Length: 65
Image (cartoon, rainbow, N blue to C red):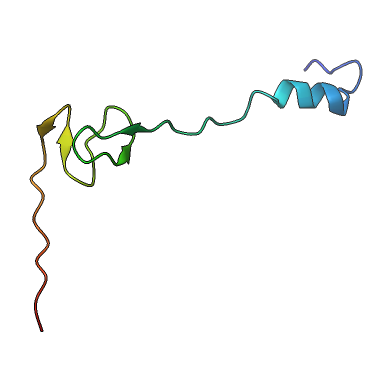
């Protein structure tokens, strides 16, 4: 198997690895409830996608004790 002729420097290794970083996910505002949500996904807060209700959410009821 072929062997490298000389060792790579730490700077050169760092330059090669500089593109390994991850991008933070982008967020947009939900058109119905104005909560931040990832693009092209159903809003977990209200259940709407593209201005239409996709998932019917139940109303929270508060019991008076």
